[in-house]
Image: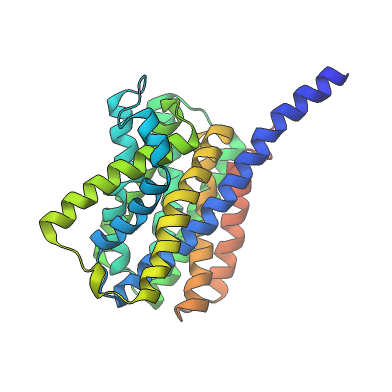
Length: 302
């Protein structure tokens, strides 16, 4: 009996870490949506924010990527490319460009809400994943909640064409990273380090080609972006999400990101003066239930 109890405890600890990592990720992601949207009112462009977002973790995690190398042994180059594109420079430039011209609420809705669906579709189509009926019902609820939020936000604030095109692309990129990281064999910190250093190098090239406006920004704006983009989003959230993927699996970890639109909508209402009403409350309840189902908590094997 003691051996059974020990085995159960060992099995539950990674799950607890996975759920904690997922929750931390969505909280930071909601802040990231608001902070990125805030840059539209500052001199900072997407290249400037990218330098901050990836430069800070690249420096802090230098001992790790110096040890593994820019192309870690045993990790196929194509997986590194998908990871860097999906959670690094390409993802950031695509989504930041969209959020610069899209209100926080509909932007967070379309990005965070479509991500679990994109991850599930890729898992089913390419990797033979077979979600049970509970998880499928959860995905359906997420889609319904996102549709409610998106319709309400479009009616009130208007979704831009740029947001419509680029944010789903960003969701697909992040879904690709989710699956690639799980198959890379890298630890959460190693994955975060490789993504940060490659993305920082790419942004240095972009800055050399197109220039930078970092010197024009105020110290408070720079401090906000260093904290929200560099430390929280670039370092903490990437590590936390990697932990969630390792413990929960690709689709289940991605399901938690559907909470981001709800938090972004609340944050937009409280911090950016965007409207909030009954539609957002209903959608929050629907998406929350969908996330619970999609993570597999209520699936028969549990």
